Each structure stands twice: as structure tokens, then as C-alpha cells.
Image 1 (tube, rainbow, N blue to C red):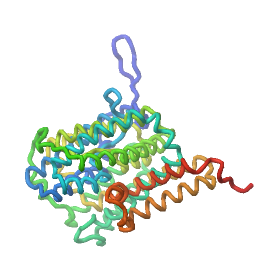
Image 2 (cartoon, rainbow, N blue to C red):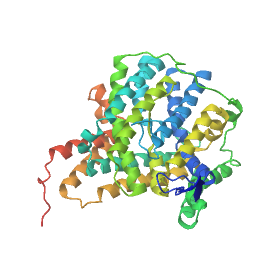
Image 3 (tube, helix red, strand yellow):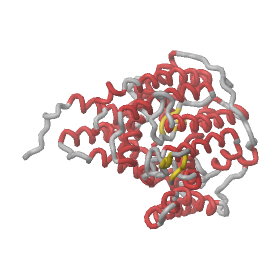
Image 4 (cartoon, rainbow, N blue to C red):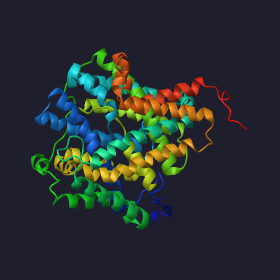
Length: 445
């Protein structure tokens, strides 16, 4: 496609598979919406859980959810279109993170929502600072570490996909036949369209699967319309609705968690460029993504939002579709902001049955897992590599599934490692990669 400007003719890049591609809106809107549907429920679930912990209800709860949507959209746009060094210039989708949830619950229980937001502000500034040192820290993240982290991210998400397919955690009809029927129908539609369709039907396969699944769920009584009726038409978030308070007992654990989520972001960005573009990320991309993680979390705290980080399911979507256009993701982010400003829009999306989302996202989670395998097997695995990867997975996945095994450890250790297999796997992989010499274990000739 060409655009004529004065006497010059400029070529407009409309390639949706290119990071700088700007496809027409008729393509960008459905492709962007795919990303938002994949992360929407996860994004609003965290503030809802925290609200339950501290007893926030009514208008205050609405503000927490509204802020989560708006700030996730703002953070995503900054990742796509950086401000100075803040942002990766990649299609990184941001949102309130489940990785922070155990820490958020502990802090909120002890210091309230004001203490949690104050810790988020300081922790975010610390997290942004980490991004400026990525060049010095990158030597700790060779392929064997990043590949292990990406693989652990994928494996840790697989149970989430199954729980959603079965109806969502705590659902009264969990595991029912209708949940599995809808979930498997969505999965089948996505697979068939991605494998045999062409054009928009192929690239929008996830959105089409979700739309059909939603329509099937309606007559089955799986959609609750009360949130739509109760939502207002327009609302603007006010900064400092919850006054901030600062406690070292809240700030220190939050700073530790920003180290952890920075590692996860490095893994997500590596999986994105490897799975979507077939290359390693640049230092500027890694640095910008981590800086944006911290900066947007601090900005979000001012506007009553909990910490943000990259969403792994959207990384899996890019690996599945190969659509790398940051414009596409930014278009989706605009919808996310609108959903916050016009709560009825957000309410419509929030009525999406978990089984529908699970059927669409389980294949995305599988792609993250396969991307991690691809990173690790891009070079022949020697005995040293097998030991590092194997032990990282054993402790990462094992301890995260049996958290009571850490009962004898100090609270700070349980807080850091108890809820995240990703954190443990990364820690083990980094330590073993440093202490096991390269030449210490040679395979037999």
C-alpha cells in the first residue's frame, strides 16, 4: 500500500507479522481484541481478590477494577511505543500480575490497601532502576536460563488452562459436561481455523472461537448479565483515591517481587522474539521492558492500580499466530482503556464464561511451553545442561505444588519462593549455571 505525500511516494508497511507493521483497522481491531480477551479476566481477578482480603466493596471495588483496566492499557501502549527508554518497542501486553498476588495478600492483610499502594509505588521505582542494569546482568541469563524460565512459565500455566476449561476455580458446576463441551468446541474451532482457514479467518481464529463459544454458552445458562446491568456508562479514575502509606515491612517484600517479575519479563520477551520473530531479544528491548514494568507499576499505584507485568498468555498467542505488530496490540490496549472509562464495555467482557476462555487459551499456554523447549534445544544439550534444566524444573515445579514442604523456612523465603515455581526455577538455574564449570561434565565420546 502506498501513500502519496506531496511529491514523494512513501511505502506504508501493512505487514501484521512485522513489529513495525500497521495493518488496516479492519484487521487490527479483531486481532487486538484477541489479546484483550485472553488477558481480561486475569487482569481484573487480582484486584477483586485483594478487595476481598481487605473488605473493599461497592464503589471502591469498582474503582480498583476500573483502574486495573485503564492502567493495563496505558502500560501496554508504553511497551509498544516507548517514551525515552521506557518500553520494549515490542507487542508486550501488560496487566495486574498473579505473580504478585501472594505478596499483595500478605501486605494488604497487614497494612491495608494504602500500604499496598505505597509499597507498589516504591517497588515500581526500584524495578524500573533494575532495567538500566540489564546489560551488566544479562550474563546471568544465557539460553539455558531463559529457556528454563520460559519452559517453567508454560508448564506452570497449563493447570490454569485446565481449571478454566472445567469452569473456573470455585465454580459450583466445576468439571461439568457443559463446561467441557463449550471449552472443547472453542478449542476445536481455533485449531481448525488456524490449520485450514486463510486470511482473517486464520489470524483471528482465537477471537472467532471465543465469539462462537460465547454464543453457545448463552442458551446453556452460562452467562450472568447482572454485572452489565449494574455497570455505569462512564467513569474517570481519580488519582490517590486511596491515600498512600509507606511501611518498610511492606516495601521490602515488594522490592524483592520486582526482582522476581523482572526475571519473568526477561523470559516473556525472550519467548516473544524467539517464537514470533525467530531471534534473540536485544539489550535495549530487555532493558526497556523491565524499566516499563517498574515505571508503569508506580504510575498505576498513583491511579489506584496494583503492580503490572507482562502477560505470558499473550506471548503464547504471538508464538501461535506469529503476528508481531505492536500496532495491533496497541489497538487492543485502546479497547482496554475504553473498557475502564466505559464500565459497561468491561462488564460485557467480564461475563465471558471461564470455559470459553480456557478453550481458547490452553493452546496458547502450550505454545509458551514449546517455545521454551525450542530455546533450550537450539543448541545440543550436554550433560551439564541436562542437570541444570532438570534440577531447576524439579525444584521449581515441585516446591510450587507442595508449598508445605517449605514450612521450616523463614517467612521471607516462603513469601519469595512459596507461590512461584518460575522464581525457584530461575534461581536454581542461575546458581547452577554459575557454580558448575563449563568443562566439568563432558559426554562420553
